[in-house]
Length: 360
Image (tube, rainbow, N blue to C red; front, top):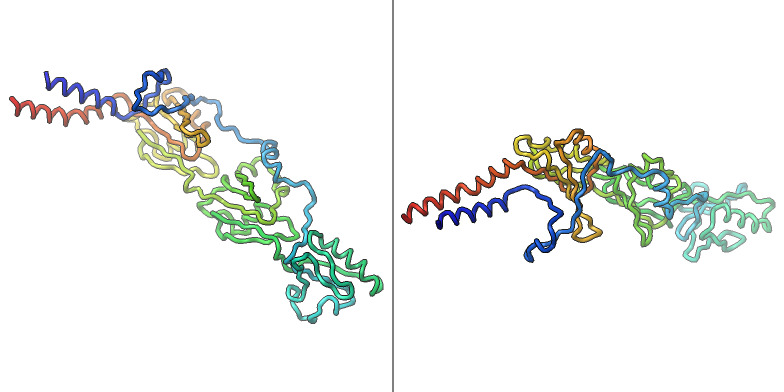
């Protein structure tokens, strides 16, 4: 009798610990022991209906309205810039250091107070003004000393305004803001483009205290007008790496392993294909699950269930796009679970039998 009781206890324990997944949303809180942690989850069936619809252009325009500018881009001079004022037919005013002097060194530095000094007329306010506005003022004031002065004003060294391009790009660098508008796509190209481990779907634009997450790949597909998203002084563009953008495929598959999500996305069917497919000898066709956490809600999970035995199941799986840190789990079949229970029981039963024989 003692031997029978011991074996029964081991059998029950083995069944409880047997690998597999069992979902029963009908269990009440009273049926959960105090030692067990209550997990808050929803169960959703994966069907032929697409789960992840692409955003349209209107959605992106609304989402990033704070970044979009419809105004004509005009560069505003700031302290630190170097200006070259060319007065035609008056080289002594244009190149004080001589004709062989480099413009960047012979130009006029915009001082900390936002002004420049020009012969005859003295200080000229330059900060927060366009070169056209500065030219108009100098022209007007020079008429007292020159007959019909003709001149041009341009920036020869952009020192005042910069943006940083960092992260997974081939040549991270600091770029100057110039008279040509700099878009986020152009800035990334000037930094050597996205590196092999870079992720175009996870690009962060940091502007002041605000941070914006941009899926450049999907935005381009939607026809987003990037010419309206011009970078500003102090902006930082950070391209995330795709190394951490993984899903974890576990359970009854041929090669359980992490799978990286490319910029093109990764469906459930594709993820299973990346690991060699399900193990037909041990897998339960009806038990394919995706476990997804919700970082914004602590302790909240969603479990998506795909019944692989159903017709068109893997078409439904191809419509279901995975997200970073999803866990894909293929449950073992009933006979597989039973065999694993036996593998745990048999060594114990041999031990108990030997103990019984010794006792007798």
